[in-house]
Structure formats: C-alpha cells, structure tokens
Length: 109
Image 1 (cartoon, rainbow, N blue to C red):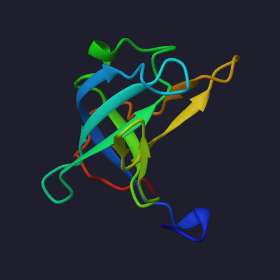
Image 2 (cartoon, rainbow, N blue to C red):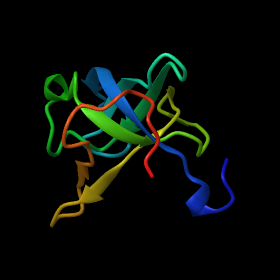
Image 3 (spheres, rainbow, N blue to C red):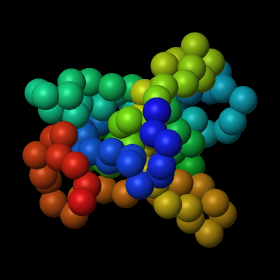
C-alpha cells in the first residue's frame, strides 16, 4: 500500500477476460482479468465499467492499472488493481488507454 499518491505505480495491461458483476452493491460493475506481461503476470480488477462498455468489448483492450495500492474483496472477488478511468458528464468511468499498442507491464511516466 502506498503512503503518497505520487508513489502509485501505473502499468499497462491487456484485458484477457471481462464479465458483468451483478453481485455487488454498486450498479454496472465489471470483473476484469488483466495480463501485465511476463514479469508481472495476471491480476484481477473490478470497476463500474458496464455504463460504457460491454464486457466482450473490453477483451483485448489495453488499459492502465494502478498496481501497488493493495487489494480489496468485492462480493468475494479479489480486486488487485485500480483500472484507471476519468469521469464522464454523469460521473461514470471512461477508461484511460494507450493510443497505440505498447509492451505489457510498462510503467506510466
């Protein structure tokens, strides 16, 4: 867990699998399994992404993930990273993603 927000490690990963997550208390949640490359392996993440994304559309997409914030359990699902997004006009996340494909596991600088 980081003490200072400037110590957050944000890496690029590729969504391997995504599925709707209706078991949570929040609407429109999605489970993600994300590949961070050979060095960092696969992680899981959960977010309110069903507002803008069909889970099938997310598979194969490169996304940015804060990977050293610790993990939380959400309705029994271990979320190990925060998938980075910015709010739309209604406050729902829109994913931040590289403009072109980049190597998995790369750190944002």
